[in-house]
Image 1 (cartoon, rainbow over the protein chains, first blue to last red):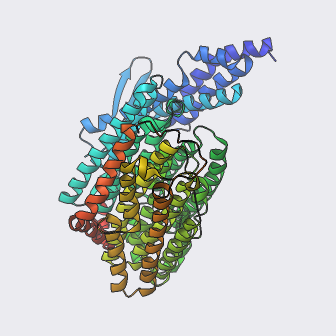
Image 2 (image 1 turned 180 degrees about the vertical axis):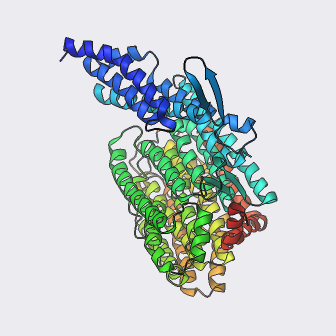
Image 3 (image 1 turned 135 degrees about the vertical axis):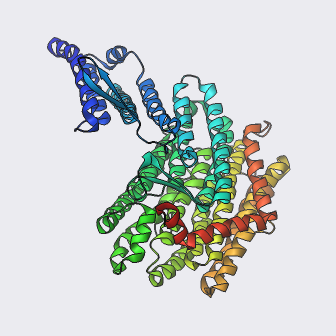
Length: 137
Length: 496
């Protein structure tokens, strides 16, 4: 069943869900949110897209294969452990830097954010892989 | 100080590389093998470091001991890590040719390393909830491995395996919840400290029983062993060998850790229970094995029987007893994996695991029979192989502690084990080939070198463990001494 209305909605909603998922991901450290939820939201956008069109279209829209998302996610999580070593702190210590950026104000960046971004990508990749596989059955 | 985290990080890195090169199937085994070798090297380094500096502690994330997740490597953990490394390398080499293309290109190697990550994580962690997480990592990977390929009998075995293991996780989690509710801590050292100071330790028995059931299921101890022979013979033999070597032993490891470190208050109840359970496990495993005719099933039942010896060592609860259990575990991990790998070789030559359909292997493959004899007679406990000394240490520890019944049972079970091994030997190698059968599939082919090398390596280790008992026993004694004196562990983690 292909509905033009649903297809139009899915195509318009996709960027919105992605931006929202990034917001939810970013506020995650101190507020509700975070990489896991963000990843789920991002995959929700693509799942809706796949339901409106089909999984192949959605995979094309995703550009990279979901597997590479997982790889990238795991790599980010791994990389986030390295700064603590260079700083001479115990393994996995959260290292933070504060940047002041005009307009945005103070931006706090740190390895937990990087780790969480790894979670975001991994969850995104895993969920999309699972759901696409199930939909193709 | 990243060393204690490396046994977890190396498999993770290997997985990343494996997934990144997912399309290049021919690279997969080599990346996997490199990762496994690195892991072995790191484990040996860790073991040497532990030997020279004592217990290594890493507070991850710079959170002080009872609050953050602590990684702790003591002598016992480091021994287990080295063994896991050895198994990782040998199974990786064996898998190059033993695992078919299709499985290799469907995440076989990433899953093997996922399993290893879970196993290593369970060995290094000093936090009971983290231990649960590593158990789950290990189980999830093993669920994929046992169903990989999706043959009908595999799925049949996997359903039993998955469901019973989920139940065991539930017990584990419930135990953690209760313990956390009562003590307010998850750190093993802190728990040990709090439980040693508390007066009403009877309350702890609820969670102790929950943990006991959970670990018993994982370790396939009587009466929770039935899932193991129902599932272990279904996947390809390299996967079974990996499972046989490591999975049940992680259960035993956790049991030894818990019941030497913090559930030590109620000795009068637990130690006789361990001895009984150990005795039953040995006897039931070995008797049911005697009635089987599939090589893999015989070996699977023997896993159970030999877990009994380790539990017996825990029940004796003297330095010699625990050291015996550790030595036996080391011997068993090596020899058991090896027998499964040899079973894979037999299958490669004859195309069958059924003892009734094969025979006369000694005539066409004399070397194979020697490769089989070393681990098999090692398991049975023939001197001078490692199993003999493992049993000797355990049984003499039993006699010294005045536990005569279990010691006699252990002796008798050794005889039955010999019977089963001699049965495989007689049926597969010695008896003439059954009449009226077509020639074996692989009779004229040479066995792939990559499948023979790990068998030879593991066989040599079994021999060396038998010939160099003294230094190895010293290592085990040292680990047992550390285990039986929880103060050392507590002090290392919590400070003074």
